Picture 1 (cartoon, rainbow, N blue to C red):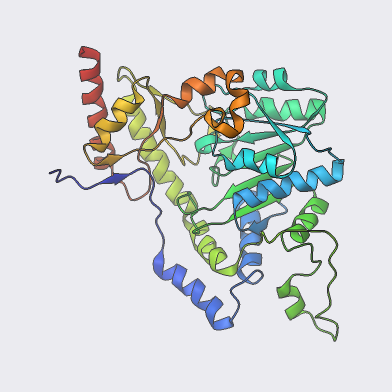
Picture 2 (cartoon, one colour; picture 1 turned 135 degrees about the horizontal axis):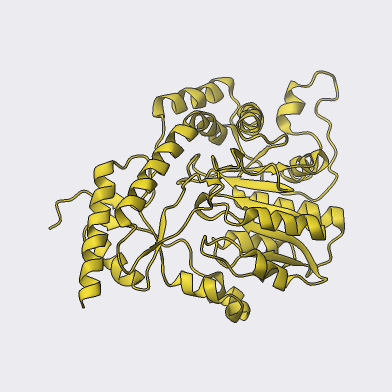
Length: 384
């Protein structure tokens, strides 16, 4: 029997008493839905991130769908229009494209696991309408080159920033430079709220559209109708066939508390990641996934690659250490298998990548323990 305590790949940390106090205020006020705390969280996120327009939603996935719907309506994209995306992501990125009636066209990735701008250029056709860029693990990769492609060809850049809460790029929070950035505050993200997200448009008209679409197309949300004075406060119009994608005040309460600790927690994640780098940099048969030089990553993930991934995975789990795999090449799924041969780097990475345990509950001793198991396994693997 293994006496070592388990080490999980991801685990959230909450300031429990502060979270309960925020939630208690919602319960005492009798307002747990949208408005109240959601509005406060949107404002705090703007102040923190440098965005001007932030709208709190039920999930990052909802935000990606809204971004595509609003762009599609505004620019009159036809059904089947092509959105260049990555096959190396959680499936919600590409499902969002399909759900809006568009076609994901996969470009390949580079050593940072983010989209390769050269591959993007190869995929552009007259049907291309936008580029969906995913900052895997909080990494920016060659994001500047992708922005340049968008500017040059007039293609909106949709930044799937699910892993990027707290990522800084050229000294500023990443996101405001994109046409829209969509963040995730899901259960094990760096800013966890059980499940929610934020959509941040550069354009104020698109932000207004997102607020209508996220509340079934209704032009006044319930909170505003409750707080507005006058005999017609109950009256509203329905302008578009929207969705029920808005966030609520309970989740926003967790976000408000978590935001106060986000930079502190990300600093811990960076220090732990740097420790992994120091301990594993010269270990044979593994390769550390590099972070872009101009990026201060949120370090949602710390990833390595090895052609013996499954064997290393087993060696770690046998010692009560539980890494993760982020992600499987989407082209391996039945839904997207028609594009399998288009992205050879993503196909290779999908068989090699491993996410090491990384969260703020871990200690330097935990990182050393994980690293020692990897070193011992690598030595044995080389000698065989």
